[in-house]
Length: 261
Image (cartoon, rainbow, N blue to C red; front, side, top):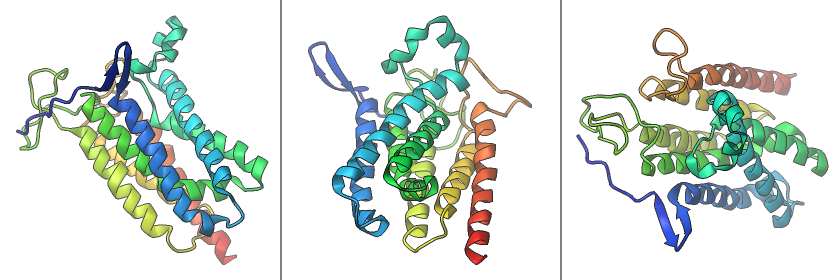
């Protein structure tokens, strides 16, 4: 068993002002995505300025935050948010959904593309390889917060989480960091280095993320208010990943068939 590193969730405290590591991880994800997007900008569209790129990153970030929050309320805890609508403003209490954030990003991308003469999938193919940076950073934030831990296990790398009871558990946040952050980034970055048919990069992102998340859900404890949806193992995260996997594979097939036509 490995010791869980006791890291204060509050990174900086200035009187009543507290800056949490989880919030800083969002800044790391957004800042890292902007830096890598800057490197790819000339290949994407040499006529775009850094200011236009900054606008795109800003709106995508808004899509992540607003979509993630609304998605969590809708997919994972709707009754609690209907009972207390102001709860949605208390972001420091936690509660973000990747799938909701993805929908927010898609809407922001569609709106930004219409205003700047780019198709939806042109922009999504550009954005997709940048997303794992934020995903990986977010999982580190979950780990520091001692949340979203895994099932009880006896594997040598199990950890006892402060708010997870006395039993050692899978550090599922680190599994997701390795798969959704590191592995997904390497796959997409390598694949997108060469010209690909429009929609192919987006499709690969959706399929790979869906598979990685579906796998980790087998060892991750589901949200307490939902539990398992069926068969004693199916989670909401897995349900939401199925259309991502199928849709991603479908986009890739469609992309390559269009390229050959």
